[in-house]
Image (cartoon, rainbow, N blue to C red):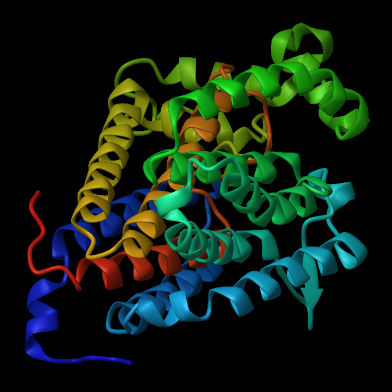
Length: 366
């Protein structure tokens, strides 16, 4: 059901929308600096406009509708992942067959599936929340979450980590006992050899080895990180963009500069100050999301926002971390900043769900 009364507009979180606009504007400017052309912003702008339409529509829809449809959403999400396994493309260009091509249009289904799994998992956890620390109930939830995780990892280990992270955070927020967290940590450590031998491809293994020692291959696998750190370091405190100096990024020395390594462009162009401003904006966004999750009217709404917050948090930490050599290179983009129509649209749809949940609470305190 959609409600368009005046009271709904009064409850709309305009501050959150303002932060989203600031981040998106920062991203557009950074993409322009990275590519040097306005044309590169056309698809990004189109995705943002579509995203704003989705935000408006979802904001005034009762999010309970999606809770009631959690099983169909879950099934469709898994079917999409199966289709990617058998018909995905992009391995030669991006290192993972995670894209589908329909009518000449490329998109990454796992981006939309993230939201589908967050919604369905939030509802599934809510239905089992009272018994979440019962071992059989927990196993049931883990199987529910584990199926899409295994399907994602089959093609894209980096995106699979996003699924694992938001699943863990949602379970923790739902009241999972600390002993299970400790057991999971121990099991994770023990399973590392199995993961290494049975699930990771040679490309992924090599990326991890180069992460620990980029000097192993500074001209290939370690090239991205080496050049990224050089770009960020060259920006120093104030950056090089406003001084008129030659751009490191525009000289094509920095691969994937408008997508995965956009933070390196920001570091070079705007220096430490520009990077700190971006991180500060992200912190405000995450804080606002946490407040909305805390004030949600029910567990489903709260867990949905928590899942979205965890998803965005992982992307921020992983993306910025890999550009400065603190995290492995996994191809995880930076929310609202990196170039990518599917990713931008997914982020905006996620915010649409957040606005819907926020508007159904009588008061939101900053």
